[in-house]
Length: 339
Image 1 (cartoon, rainbow, N blue to C red):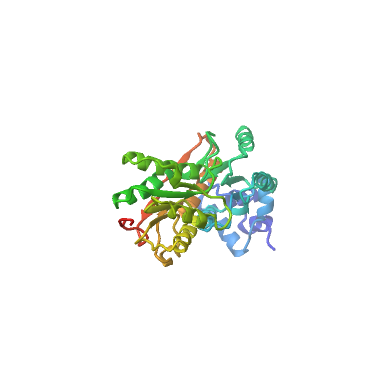
Image 2 (cartoon, one colour; image 1 turned 90 degrees about the vertical axis):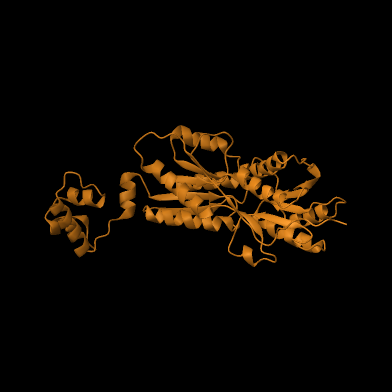
């Protein structure tokens, strides 16, 4: 196996010159010398020892990603964007899931940090702010993804959840709906849930409609809770004519709940979901949704972290807010008069 000394001897240059080329440092180097070294590297099929380089530079070119629930298909598209952007920039990624457990989130962050990852991207549960404050004080790079950590000033990539919910509710109102239910999981400091509920309320208020707390169903995160909540809404004497759901699992459960209640979608009740996946158009009926730019979120988070890692200038925290869009399908229509 060729060494850097062998390459230097073949090119007739010093080892330090070869090292400069390997590191992309061509300053004060002639084009002839650079090409001679590159030719020697190619001829000898030389590949530098990345571990040795990492130890020397105190960088591993690996970043950690901690997600709250890796079983959610929303994260597959985010990871695809993250992986492709990391590869493009010459970085690898390590991924772990906290399963919505604050202790596991903290352990995963510290584990990845102990593995010498250069920085971390965290979809935080919201209970590890003290650790993030410590990272800020010690200048350890991290990016918050999808969820905020209170009012913390940190690099962040999020979606405008308020606007996404407002667009969905406004569409239903424009269709003639006046009683619109909403299903969500407990907010528990989870910024997307808080924001989607806020967007729902804002849209109602903007159109002069009352906020009826009986139409707001907080579901626990057990499978089937959304089905029960949907049945409860649809058994009300003055039941809603439309229901807005706020995540992928609840999308499926509200459709099932409507079916169990003996109602047809959208003839008897319209349903508007959140998050969009390739299989959504295959549902019966195809579901109208708020689509998040998941792939772009992954790309932006990795790009932001790498920019932080490689910048030699002092940077203020950046907040990147991406816009969702609504996709209209067959699960929504104008309401019919309820007998």
